[in-house]
Length: 94
Image (cartoon, rainbow, N blue to C red; front, side, top):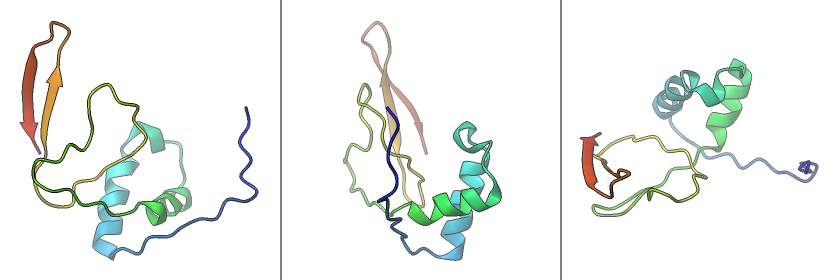
């Protein structure tokens, strides 16, 4: 089914030039954005919105539908995955 974007209103979230560049540098190398022009990438940067999490918050849960795209501006994020045998493994902190 084709989406109707006629009534779409772009919501721009203000951010510093430093944060804009962080996002640009991150998405330019991502396969999702590899065919986009510089102008299109800048359009994407405008709509990224800041989100804050507290220690212990779950950002993404394995198995849930992925609908968000995150960049870590500061802090740490621990990644844990469950493999096929049900064993939970801790991965790298980023």
